[in-house]
Amino acid sequence: MSLFIFVFFAVLYVIAGYVSAKCIYIATKQMWLGVITVLMSTTFPFAMSLMHLGIPCNWFLNIWCYIGYISIGFFMYFSMYCLCVLAVWLFWEKLNLQKAFLFGIVGVVMLLCYGYFNATNPRLKVIEIPSDVEAKICFVADIHVGSIGTVNLLNRTTNLINSTDADFVIFGGDTLDLNALLEYKDEFLKCMAKIHKPKLAVIGNHEIYAGIAESIDVMKQAGIRVLLDESQNIGNLTIVGRIDSTSPQRKPLSQIMPQNPKNVIVIDHAPKEINESVEQHAMLHLSGHTHDGQMFPMTFVTRFKYGTKTGVLRKLQNTYCYVTPGAGFWGSPYRIGNHPEVVLVLLRRR
Image 1 (cartoon, helix red, strand yellow):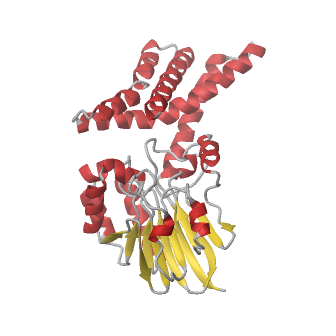
Image 2 (image 1 turned 30 degrees about the vertical axis):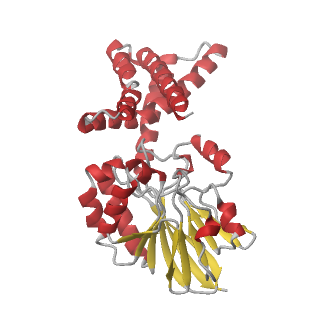
Image 3 (image 1 turned 90 degrees about the vertical axis):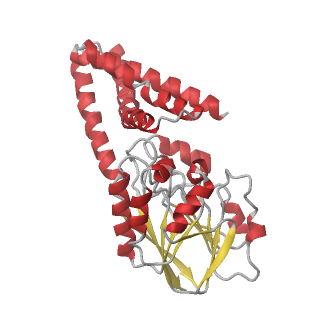
């Protein structure tokens, strides 16, 4: 199934590149721009195919992947815009296609500039939970250290975490990506050393892709305690950390709940099994993973798939649930239609 999905999106990506190339030629009358556009539309599928085959040429793949990641947003939005313009032109032939496509090029580039600025500047989101204890918890998911713009994003996220003055920090998975282990390990360790609070983490699907053992080793060097289907008490709180659902070693929540737990907070990277937290009477369930689709209109896809709206605190029976859109991004360096965030959870006495 995953191969089918990859082939489907690769073909769709190339078609979007072809549509964009034709419209760019109409707008500029420059054949070479159209040729370059078509070639760029092959970069991402080509690079991902090489990575899937395990070909060891990291620097080459990085260049091609970055070109592909950056161009994804342009092909996605410009091709959609062009199809809308052509649909209007079929019913109103007086429409000047050249001017309309030129306007689209400028408009999409401006939209992507906003999307990049938005993606690399996470905000602070504060949520309050009634509880039997008082505590401040900083929850951060989906930093994706190793993506484009890692250094700037990591520094900004670290500063935002420190500004919360939380009692402890929880990383909710996909903290590290493959390139974090190859190129950004030192930068990650340097930033984590600036956080002088207890740090916990769970494993996300991207730590599994990068290598669980290697990812855990890097996080341990950064002073982060990784919860692998286990719990830890911090004061009067019980933090239960689950391995991501893509791991075959994942256990049911009922098997990892401690006896006589107090004020349970369940950390599960993907919000697939919130119902288990509700059944186990957890006080709070925290997840990430979805990125809220990252780029509109993919927002609707993730909400349909996971059946939950990101960034909204919900209460299911006696369990509060929150799914964050995450602090970073994966692949295309844009966020359009949502905002990245670092979450400050305030537990307030009832």
